[in-house]
Length: 155
Length: 155
Image 1 (cartoon, each protein chain N blue to C red):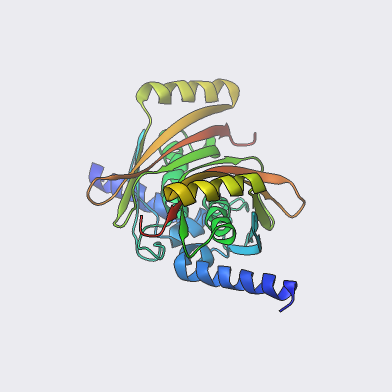
Image 2: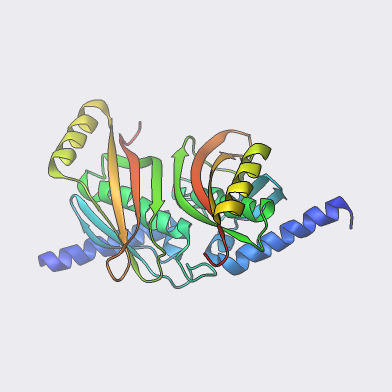
């Protein structure tokens, strides 16, 4: 497979996984559209998700951001050995979201290495993840800061 | 009408309002089950809302808590003059939620009076709202702290 094929296959698998594991998020139309080690982008459309004034509901923006923590953990660390859990999330609403929203989260290489080393040694490791949510014009509509924990299976 | 009839009618109207105004929350089965001046309780069931390990998804717990800010504002202040908006919410996940979850939020009388006075004078007023989410055994599964703003229509 080419690199492009591999990337497409990773996305297909991740979105199928979300559909199976978190169907309520999949039903909102939340999709992962970019997925690499240390970088993930989610997307959600207004259709079916707006309130009476035409803006995407707070709980939907929360979901497209929160889900990145699990997705980036699975794409960055060894999913056969570790699974992610969420501890807390703060979401700040900046602007009304009326168009397609993309949520982007990144883990720097040094953070990845530190988290992997701690998880290896202790069986678990906390990591913080910031997500930035932008509308179709690139305007930041919300930001989130989440605390997640990577845990060894069986702990 | 008796007081009980009035309370039931308030709930019916509020849930019909949520269905019309935030259909995505209504589709999750989020319902307001108690609604009084200064006190509101929401409920959500696991059915359709769990993840692959049988616990209610984070975004659903967020929704049943976040929605209380709007509901309590509409029940406590004059909805003909003021509407609520959400600015930020922090949610802390404490325990897995595997059963029916109730989310409860309260505004003390002195807070209500201060918010009403500020909104009257300035056309808007911020208020903070804490919600406590408990499962069917009364165990706290999550808590939220939200910042909302009450605004005059037309501002």
